[in-house]
Length: 397
Image 1 (cartoon, helix red, strand yellow):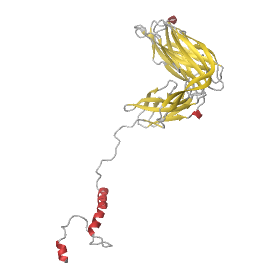
Image 2 (cartoon, helix red, strand yellow; image 1 turned 180 degrees about the vertical axis):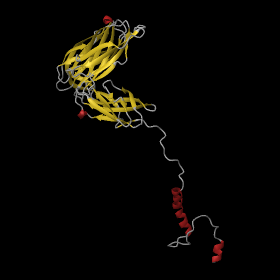
Image 3 (cartoon, helix red, strand yellow; image 1 turned 90 degrees about the vertical axis):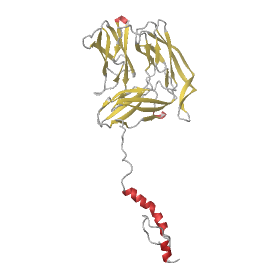
Image 4 (cartoon, helix red, strand yellow; image 1 turned 60 degrees about the vertical axis):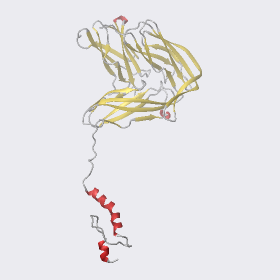
């Protein structure tokens, strides 16, 4: 075919790039053009204007950033009878002060303390002592929910995991919740089991409330069924029973009828011959009958925390406010342990039919019992009425 005929059969020109008729090796020019198209397209998108908007954060970020959200305490780090301490540190990464309103606990065996208000850029701390004496052997998981407000209400969930050894002191139940709204007595029981090689012996038991009576009922040294917590293949906690040699002391008690109205904190205290466990305490909440209209008395808080430590930074004193009818008269005050000192005085003039009393509670010296629990009773109107204040004693690590 002549050169003229080839020219007549050539397709019309397009906007495709112009290349030479042949390349090295005799490849046709159209194949070269097709091979270059992806590169040219890439060059266009690289040098042209972006087709999508830049990435921006439109959702406000939480103000508190925690250094960790989960702690794990393996069995080898846990000593029976000694509290397990966990500290969560956090930073306020906003430009406004943040106040933590509350910390919810999945177990009453934890007594968290935290930095209430954190300025912008500052670091705060949430310290969580975990009482080991009320735990069963095996794996446990505890949750804390931190409630605070920045631009809106926030919640942060923290997790503590711990594996408790088999040879330890176990108190069951860990706490008691009883309702007593009639004249018929209500009975309860507590078991103190010690699976260590040298078990303790309970020598005495008593309760802080006059309407609660207790006594040591039965003690054995035999094969005791012990409930342990393990983790299944899916990571879920499950309970199993096993037999171990140990000592068990049964404590029985009775809540008498016709108790004062309101909700009352009570401590059952068992004295032992073990220096490591001089006193074993079991907290109780007893729900009595409702107050009659106009006769209700209440506290602004029912629980305070004090430091069982020396030093200028130790918080060894606190106070609560009691609002009660003007007819109320505090007859006497009791406190356990005896190292707690209590004073009370009027907080301003009576308003209407009510008066406000400030109750000051001080840890005068460190308790020999090493207890983590305390209690104050305000007995009024010659024993007809009663208000209780729950006290937590936070011992240093």
